[in-house]
Length: 187
Image (cartoon, rainbow, N blue to C red; front, side, top):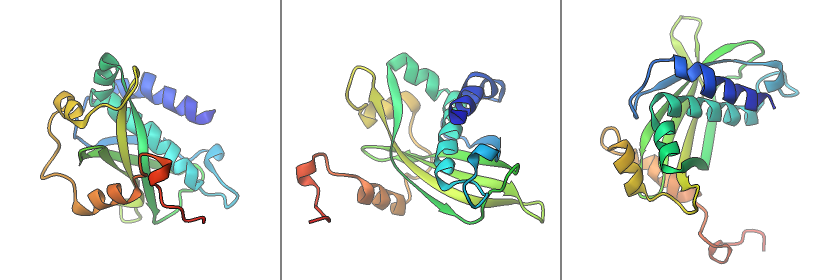
């Protein structure tokens, strides 16, 4: 329930008061580790990282105008794959920022990088965790939005395209279209 509150707080109030962003700008979203975020080890639960990443992506989508474009066209975003790597734990009441940015897209999905950042002892930003999302856009009327339509709506991606390793990751983690095509590791 508290994630729903966090999402609504950001999407309905906080995000609208922050500066607008370009589609490919870095969005910085501030959070604090709450008691409801903790696990038995008294640090942020690994599953909560993904939930907070969702909130930060919604903040980015509102600020960069993508949320409005999606609503006009009857689209909505879904996560197809995600991964995260941890360096340090976030403790109770620690303030942190999630830096979110669109890396680019391939012929099927959009890729987003998200970093959990805190100020280090030397005053410089320190990355506590880093996650990557492979997302798609679906139509409320049914079906997937072709990437050509996504590119047309949002413009060409940043830089020279996706890093090779993230394209491989996207291919490696994608499930086959049907169950019959999936190799069974449980036989």
